[in-house]
Image 1 (cartoon, rainbow, N blue to C red):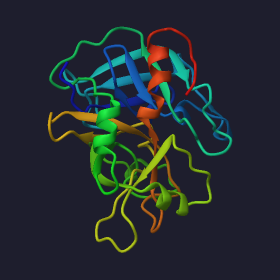
Image 2 (image 1 turned 60 degrees about the vertical axis):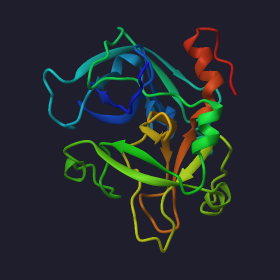
Image 3 (image 1 turned 180 degrees about the vertical axis):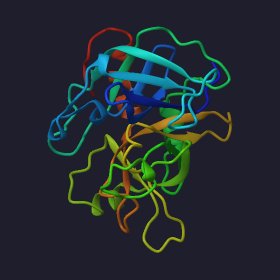
Image 4 (image 1 turned 90 degrees about the horizontal axis):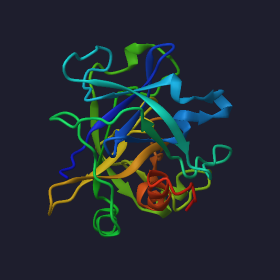
Length: 253
């Protein structure tokens, strides 16, 4: 199957608004961050009936007739060892679509990383692409004036794990990686509120295919000096994902 990068929007039914980003990984499964679904400190605990998946979207606010597909979900599976209390370790969830999606020019699954691809692409300084409809800057205002009209993208370099750990007092695990620009570098940019759950993808130069390496997870503010964005390490979650999709239980990594 030919795989390309495709962003999915998770949409709240009531009130009708953007919830998070996500990605399509097959014709019936969507991948997102667990904290988009379950985060008790913010009284967040969504059920399948409260969320819609919007596929093939570009414009954030407008219904794109003839281009987008809106699909309900019938099951949410959050990683059983997702640690919302401390550090968002294993920040990952799978959503099962109520009906199978037909692929077209705008709606395709993203490729998931093999061990070979992960070893090949996940090096310090190599850049991945992050996409989303989240805030354009750090803000406490819920106003839509801080949200983009259309899907945004940014290319961010992977940062070595020691630098990631030194940048924060939060306990970092091997189920995470971080990306972003270091202080003094001319370029800037970061994922922000509303981008959570979206894909961090990298292009394999040999096959020209895009692989999803990470899931937008957390950060301390947005684009702050000396701070980085943290992502769920998708290859480390592969066994759990496979077991869920194969319906053979929810054993954890």
